[in-house]
Structures are given as C-alpha cells and as structure tokens.
Length: 478
Image 1: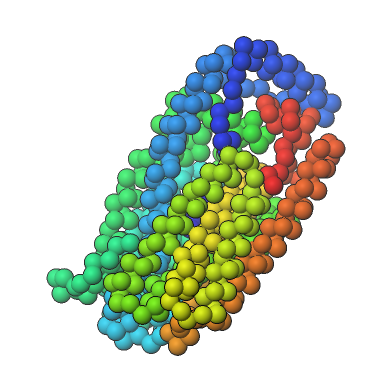
Image 2: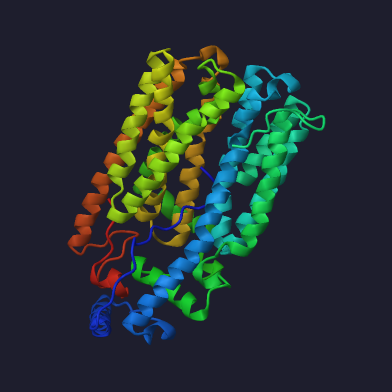
C-alpha cells in the first residue's frame, strides 16, 4: 500500500560454519563446476575478497554486515511507511476536524476527494517502480519522492474549494504511489494544522533518509569493499544471481512482459487486491468508529487500540513467518478473523460487539498483508526487472479498490454499513481462496524442481549457481 518496494525475504539466521567448511565449499564448488559443464553454463566463483575468507571470518563479517544494514534500513523504512500512510489517510481525521464544513463539501464530494488520490497512485505505480529499478539508487529516489509528497500534503492546508482539494489529492497520489491538534490556532482550523504538521514532519524525515538508506549492494557507498562483495555474493548464493548489476540489465518492457506472462503474478494480484479491498475500511475508520456515538475526540482515541493490536499481531506473525519459512497459514489465518469481524459489524448495532469487531478488522486484514507482500518476492524472485514490474503492477491494481470503496461508506449507510461490510467479507474470503490456489501451484512446481525439471524463474541444480542454490536447488516458499 505504498510506493516503497517490498524487500527480498532473507534467511532468518546467518549460516553457520565449522572446521570443515572450507573443504565443503571447495567440494561444492567442484561439484557445481562439473554440473555446470554438463549443462553448458560456466560456474560463477566467489569474488576474491570473499573467496579468501575463512569460515569464521566470513561468519563474523556476515553478522556485522546484516546488523549494519538493518540498523540503517529498518527504522527509516518504518518511519517512511508511517508517514506515507498518515499523509494518505489524514483526510479521514480532517473530516472530523471541520474540513467538510469549512469547504462546504457534500458527502459525495468528500468521498471523491478521498478516492481521487488512488487514481494518481495507480497510474504512477508501475512507471515509478520500473524507474527505481532502472536507476538503482533507492536512497536517492525514495527520499526525493517523499519530500515532494510532504510538500503536497502540507499544501492541502491551503485548499479553499472542492476543486483545489481534488487537484492536491490527485497529485499527492502521484508522488505517493496519529497527530491531531484538537483546536484551531493562529487563525487556522484544526484540519489545516493536521496537514501542515504531518507534511512538515514528512519532509524532515525525508532529508534524513538521504543519509541513512542503502541502495543496491553495488551502489551503496557506505559499505566497505569487503562488505559490498559479500552482500552481492549472498544474493548470488540465495537466488542464483546478483540482484542489480547495472541499469542496462533492467529494461522496462522486458520485465513487464515476463511478469504478465506468469500466472503466479495474476493469482498474487487477486490475493493482494482482495486483501487491500477488505482493508479499505481503514480509509474511513474514524467515520466508522464515530458511529459508536461518542464525541469527535473520543472517537479518534478509540481508533488507536485496533491499530496498536494490529502492530503487535503483525510483528509477531511476520517474525514467525520468517522464522518458520511458511507463508500460506500466516496469510490466511488472520483473514478468517477479518471475515468474522465484518459479519459482526454488519449484523448488530450494539456498541460492545461492534467495537470488538472494529478491534478485529485492522489486525485481521493487515497481519497477513505484509506476509503476502513478502510472498510476491519469494514467488517471483528473478530476474529483478520482472520482480519490480510484478510488485508495481500488483500494488497498483490492489490499491484500485480504494477508488470505489470510499463510496460504500456514506454517512447515511451508518452505523452498520451493510453493503461495505458484506463486500469486505466476500473479498477477504476470495483472498483466502486465492492463497490456497497459489499454494497448490507452488507445491506442484516444487515437485518438478525435485525431479530436476526446469521451472521459469527458479534456480535448479546444474546451472552453475553457487552455494546453497547449487547444492539444494531453489524451492518456492509455501
């Protein structure tokens, strides 16, 4: 649900070494060379700085490398995702803070302003991801985009009419591919301060991101030469090829052609579309919670616990999915809770059950969503241009649901929002079915790999691939 590309899944722990590792590596290399010569492909060798490391030296260097990247990457990505989400959805809080009243908007006009962002978001998603992959410098591109969306978000505070609001929201969607001041100050209503404060914070974080974010291994300047070669080699061992060599290898249309020809991408697209469609309830979550009948401030406070619970369940579920290497159950089990939550919300007007349902909606949808994003990279690992095109296409189409979903939440449909909750329930169930279908396909493809048959986009034994990819062969994550 953002312009940021989902990171490649990595092993949950560093590979260990023993006293015989150097011999084992040499034997594996010899075997790989023999198999490669039979297949007509030349084996790839470890770069010199990695090749001459002892097992213990490499183990220590890998730990330092992963820790160095994680410290720079993860906190900043978390902040960027948070600000991306806030800047897209703060209009829901602004509604409660007087936006409709001051701009004299009808309910339909407000919903149009909410939806128009996703039109621009959808149009730019694929070109943006492909350009990023071509450029090869996310540490330059992403903060720049973030500054632009922060400026546009802050400019929303200057909107004086429906037309101005629509234009700003549309271009915000282009570059995007909680805080609540309460009362007005300095002659500005609270909703205007909401956009100003969040926009300025976004810009400040973006400038910090220039100094912190890594690029691809070959283009990250703050890695030492040893660390750079080891990072490239780890990718080579895991998926059988370097993730990014140069811009000339990253062709826009070739990557799109490969992605669109793969049925797995279309299944993943249905899966992500349905998950995001179910999660569109969060676009107007303050409005939904507001139907409980409390004041605006209390209603906004009541939107917090579902997200807190969602953070906890998402973290635990993602950690466990990475630890176990399993995807299917970590995606589908939370969705069953989402289905139950939507049924409860549509069938009762009693306060307690409805708030319980609201507490389950956010975790039910988003707990499995992040694992589903990782499943894309697991299922379509190479070549990088194909993965970038698939991620962009899936992300763009999945967010298209937000264009129409807003119209399912007119104030007149409250408090049960029967149509919206029913649609959300159905799409969550379809997501479960899509994940099940994809798992059957991946199981079948893994059996073909077990028999030594070639599978497009996968690494098999005898292809001159180093390390674990050569000795075990690539397998799709289930």
